[in-house]
Every structure is written in C-alpha cells, then in structure tokens.
Picture 1 (cartoon, rainbow, N blue to C red):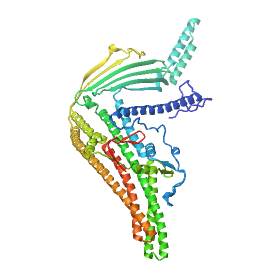
Picture 2: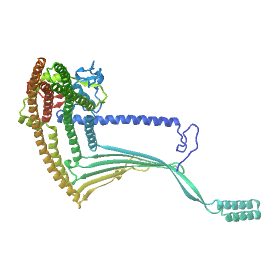
Picture 3: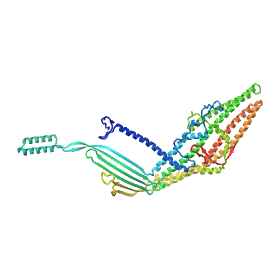
Picture 4: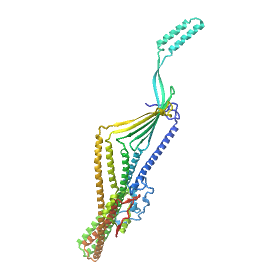
Length: 628
C-alpha cells in the first residue's frame, strides 16, 4: 500500500512525513550529502585501519623469518622505477644483423633494474603479496574474537491503529431532559401542560421507532511512537568461557487520545564456562593458534617465493642475453663466411677450386643464413616473453644491457668452495619450507588433542542475572535490590559420538601423514641440495671445456683463413672450422650463464640466498674460487 500526500509548495512531494512535520528539499539534500561524505570517509578509514593492523602482524612475525621482506606493503613503492629514467640507445645495434630491428631510443635495461621492475610490476608477484596480506587480514578477525565486542541497535516507528468503539445513545438522556423541562414549566405556571407532554411522548415514540435510543458504533483512530535501544558487549575468553552484557530500553508515547508515556530499561549479564568438552586454553583457542601459525607459514612461503622469483628473473634475463649473443655470433659467422664464399668463387673462376667445393661452401652459407634467421626469431620471442614477466607490454621498446655479459666474462667463474656435506647441513637448518613441514607436525598433534577432547561429555557452568528499572518512566534507575539471577550446570552426555569418533580417527591418520610428509620434505631438500651442488660442479667443468674449445676453434679458423689465402684450404675444412667456432662460442656463453644460475640455485636450495626489498639478492661471504 502506497501513501500519497498532496504536493506542498516548496517541499518534497510523495514523502511520508510525520503529522505536523515537513522537511524542505534543501535540508534533505544536505543530509544526503553529509551521509555520502561520511560514507566515503568511513571506507577510506576502514581500509587504512585494516592495512595498519595487517602490516603490524607481518612486522611482528618478520623477526622469526630470516630474509623476510622489510616494511611489507601492498602499496606502490615511494620511488617506482620509470622506464623514462633509464638510459636510451642512440642508434640501432648493427651487430645483430638485418633480421633484428631495434629502434633508436629504446630503454636499456640492466639486470638490477630488471629485477626491481619485476618486483614492482609482475602480476604473479603481486598475487603472492596479496595472498600473504589476506592471511594476515584473516588473523585480525580471529584475534578480534577474543576482545570485547560491542554491538548496538536502535529502532523507532510511528504506528497507527483503528478499532470500533460502542458509544451509548444520547437520546434517552435528551428525552429525560425534555421531561424535566415540562415538569418545571408546570411548576412555574401552576397548570398542566398536556399538550407539551403529548408532544414529548410523540417525539420519544418517534425516536424509539427510528432507533435513536440504540448505542452507536464509531471508528476510533490511535497513533503512537514506539522505540527501543540496545547496547551489547561480549567477550570470548581464551579458556573457552564467554561473558556477555546487554542493556535494553523501550519507550512508548501516544500521540492521539490519552497522551501517555511509558519507558523501561533492563540490564542482563550472562556467563558460560565449559568444564569438560571445549575447556582449556589449548582446546578453546585452537582456531586462533592455528591462524597465528598460518600467517607464519605464509610469511615463510612468500620469503622462499621471493628467492625463487629473483632466480627466475635472472634466468630469463640471461637467457635473452644468451640468445642475443647467439644471434650476434651467427651474424658475424655469416658475414665472414660470405667473404670466404666470394673468395672461393674467385678461385673457382681461376680453376683453383672445383664447382663441387664451391657448391659445398654455398650450401653451408645457406644453412648458416637459415640458422641466423631462426636465432633472430627465438631472440625476439624470448624478449617478448621477458617483457610480460616484467609486467610490461610487448610493444614496450626495451633492450637488455650487453654490458651484463661483459661483466660475467670479466668476472669469470665465482665458484663456491663448499663441501656437499656442509651444504646439506646448512640447508637443514636454513630452509624455511622445511620449518613449515616440521611445524605442521605440531599442528597435527594439537588437532589430535582437540579431537580427543570432543569425545568428552559437555558440562558447562552457566549463570545469568537480570536487573530492571525501578519504576515506569525512569529507565536510568536500575533496581539492583530486585535483581533476578540463577546459576547452574548444563550437561550434554553426547550419547551419539560417531561423528566425534570419526574425527578423532581421521586426526590420528592425519598426524601419521604429516610425519611422513616431514621426513619426505627433509629427504627432498637433501636431494635438491645434492642436485644443485652437482649441477654447479658440472657447470664449472662445462665452462672449462667450452673455454678451451673456443681457443682451439679460433686457432683453426685463423689457420684455415691463412691456408685459404694461399689457396691450400679445402672447403670442408673451412666449413668445419667455422661451424665449430660458432658452436664453441655459443657453448661458452651458455656455460657461463649456466654456472651463474647454478650458483644462485645452489644458494637458494641451501636457504641462504637473501633478497632485499628491491628484489636484489645478497650472497653470504663464503669462500669462493675464481676462474678466469
């Protein structure tokens, strides 16, 4: 049913107003504006409070996690790395050949800047940060359950009611009054007024015939304002008990009819404490305990993720540089071999070379050109994939800094001198994921105790008290002398315990599984460290072999060039020498990069690769053996 009021000039139309109350449109608009402003401020303040509380939890637990990110925040860093601030290429790199077009003015990205950019923009990295934040945010609610929790409500309503009310007829009283008047006239005049009596009798008869002497029924309308307020507070105790208090006030005011008022208040206190099932700090606060530990686990996992993320960015960066170096080597080889082909063609024209030898040189040139084109395509694909890893668009014009490869070649191998047994022992006391697996064994043991407690019968001590106001319309005065209270025990024998029995047996099985997972995690870590150590040793040997191979290939190519100038070289020897040089140069680059990544993986698997806030790694000053 819709109440429609007539329009009032200067006031809002179709607005349900209280009787005698009208609110102007300007006042209503001001009120709505105020509510919108307050709502906006409320959402901003809520976000800031949530961030402050979640960040405080992570800061509180960070000292327990070596290498945790300092000053964790979901917000953008104060000074984000801008591509506009990076060095720019002045001219295209002609050393990459005709298949690679790098426009001038492209941003030159060093390894350090690439890692910083990935930390700031990578989508997966941001998702990992948000997952950690949400874990801490969930803990704020679990902690909140053990603090005083206030709640309140207020309600008011304008009520209208209508009912039928029987009203006695005034006709008998009126006719009695007429009779009295006739009697008084007779006394005053001293004569009987028969005519007046006759008229009065006739009028009375007519009224009775018309039903004027019957009681009348009329509709009586009543309006009243009702309201109530309630303020509640409760607190859950670590031992399983709960204390609650509630203060309620009700009021009533009649607006029509008898203007009565009525109000009253009541204060209620309740307390409950389990004595068997659900009793004890370890049992009652299990959810909070697990939530606290889950945040610690998430912080450890994120810290380990940051190590893996940095290594992956380094691997992708060096992979692009490696492919770029392959393109450069193939292009250089192709140009040199094209010169050799021209020289061999001149010798063939003089009769110093056969057409078969010249054809072999031409075929190798075509193969070399095909390899160059394929290498250029792979380089462009890897560069685009690396841009996505950094959180950039594939259209972003960037090139990687060639000086990073020069630095690697200048430094040579930085090989750690760590025994395998020592590395394994360090990993067993440093790996954060192993700590998580061991701590989950403690969690499983606690869950067994909680499940065993659930098999007990329920026995709770309960108490409550109720205090009302002293008298009507005096809600602020509570009469504690007339307080009602009771205290007693609630017993739940839990005759059907099949669900609890199954949960207890499942908890025992979960404990056995967790123990197996813990030992498996320890064995896997040993396996990873052994594999990383062997990979590092293998990378060192591969680098030595590749370095010697490059030196030999360079001498062979020089020798074949001298023989070719003298007309003594064969096409097959020149092809083989040039092909071996390309492969050995590419192998040397790959071996140098593989050793660098193997070293980073070795530190990570040992658990001692520490990552700063900017994502850059910090290696411990262990003994290393440098090779030129």
